[in-house]
Image (cartoon, rainbow, N blue to C red; front, side):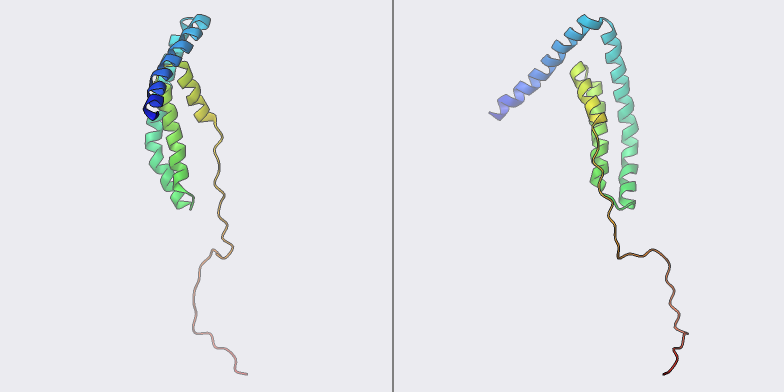
Length: 131
């Protein structure tokens, strides 16, 4: 049954995109073409920007003691949104916008109460008074 579901999704999504594009084109006309071209430009820019920023975000998360997978997940969401913008269609653009504006969960910052920041210097020359 899984192959039929996959086939239905692979054939159904482009048909849904085409149907919605025709409906939107009937409402707004040739502006749809401008919309689709603009979404491709946005998608390409998102992917270009994110492919260089991904490694920096992961390194910054590791240095700050946060979960690096959270940074990878956030970058992956932006990359997926860029790919959906490049795919021509109104539905995929809507899904891409949802990915971009969906609120991100912030990982709680670990608080270590046993750690005291500072410098340490040992001095053995101190003599204690004899009682």
